Amino acid sequence: MEKLLTPRARDLLRQTEERKKRQQQGNTDRKPPRAERDRPRERPAERPRQRPDDRNKAKPKPDRETPRAERPRRDRPDTSRPGAERRPDARPRPRPGDRRDDARRKDRRRDDRPRADRRRERPRPDRGGELEFSLPIPGLDGRVIIRKDGDITVRSRDDERFGRDRSDRTVQRLSNGRTRVVVRRPNGVSVITVRDSDGEIVRRIRRMPDGREFVLIDNTRARRDHRPLDFRPLYLDIPRDRYIVEGEIGRRPQVKEALRARPVEPVERPYSLSEIRRNERLRAKMRRVDLSLTFAFNSAAIPATQYDRLEVIGDTIADEIQNNPSDVFLIEGHTDAPGSYDYNLRLSDARAESVAIALTEYFGIPPENLVTQGYGEAYLKIDTLEREPLNRRVTVRRITPLLDGGR
Image 1: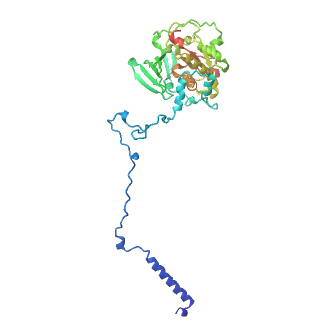
Image 2: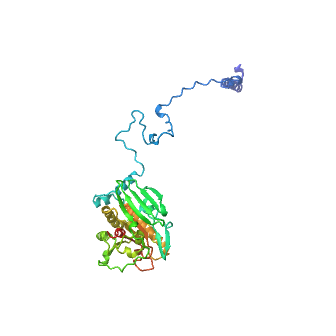
Image 3: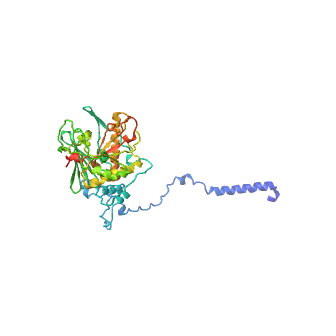
């Protein structure tokens, strides 16, 4: 019959048969009837869960009644399991900052190595900017100006310098408004400072780990006399350049002599630290070293290029404290004339504190052996009202004979 059809009709018939075959094949992929779809399916059997290993079990929380010493610690391995005992040569993992603490502990000890070896290991600042300790720069806002009997001074509180090496501080209130501050360092050294109701230091001692004590300041030995101190004009029997020494790099022997020398005139009695701070004629009994640092105008930061000038003072003070751990040095800050008197007092006190921090950070000098005081523009080295870099200086004196009465 296909022979009687035209070619066009044969093509249509062939296409119709192919369409029927495709429909028959598609019926096998269609969804089952509704009755079969609603029939609940059987879920495959669940696999048995694996039991956790005994080592991965959560440790029970310690009972509150269990003594703290018997509770397990996270940083201590559990030795209850066999084979978990700590090896004899095992060491705890060092915490961040331990290397820095170890270095500072070594600085507090007596170092008998040659000076060249000590200088080689000493950290040096980046000469491109400021010394590391001066960030942040000691602020000016927290310094208190005291006006009493026509005298204007700035109160210099050195407690903040004691806590820069992660020390533990304890403050205790005593009778009559006094306070007792105990600073414990990681190396076991304790510094005990007792202050009166006005904030003045009454007594300061350093207690070593072996129980030894070094008395640094003891104002109880000073006579309580509120009358102004009256002295004769100062008479010098030594050249002036040996009495006031310029702290330059090439004058290291003169600096050492000035800071080791005895008073230029007799010391009548033990004086308190407040008397030494407030009376220039009393301080004049001791030789001094003028350190003219190129402070920037209106700044307390020390440029890193001035590190060599600090090294002259730092090495000498460090050697003196090794020979006599009870030595105390006064760091005086000075400014030039421009600016208000109160502001210059605060600025000079901040500069003195910057030098004290530098001596501690870079030369290992204990901060309790240093006291600071700012004097502003009161004692100009060059008498001028203009800006003068030489007036922006720091003066260093050894005041131990004044505190001890010349002994």
